[in-house]
Length: 247
Image (cartoon, rainbow, N blue to C red; front, side):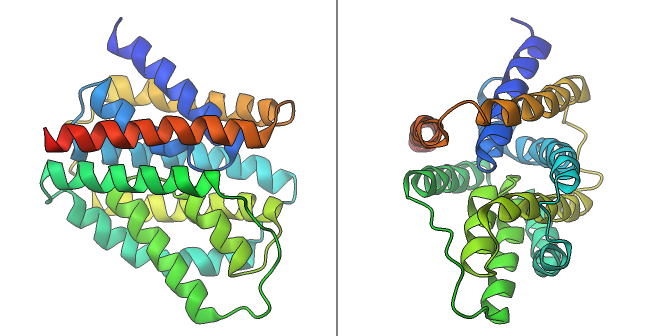
């Protein structure tokens, strides 16, 4: 099977996960790029940022059309993450591959555990700007460092810290993710020589199309069951990556 075909299949799976679950789908992009397409961890995180930016921006357009984006709240939340995303994006390329792989495995496991936990939608009694800024900065750092969108972190933060409804939190998280991913990409300008655009481009295109199909799939299937299946897959990926680092 050629690299382009693998990229199309992997991109479609990532897009379907993003569109169906609203967060966490991009976590699959990095291991797919490393183990299926032969990218180094540093190149995979950079390529993942490109995929995340394009896919999130496309989904953001759809959610904006449906009125599910809190622009003022999302802009302030994203602003807190711009500098951390830029700094983490610049630092990631200088770290040993084993460190990046182990860190990513930890984030994948965290994403899986977050999906297995029941999510509440009750707003907080008081909205604290310090907590909101801290959550935004933390999300930006994760996005820049590991090349993931971080929707599995952004959505609970937007609900629990800023009091958004679940639907508006999902739409607003796409704005935050897009801004953070762009900041991290800016920090990595000039480091994409090993990205193999003939693979990244079809991967990104398939992810965008898969995200649109995922939105339709979400309306027809049980979100809880899908989250459990996806969480199990993420835990398996995390375990595999940790074993790969140790061995």
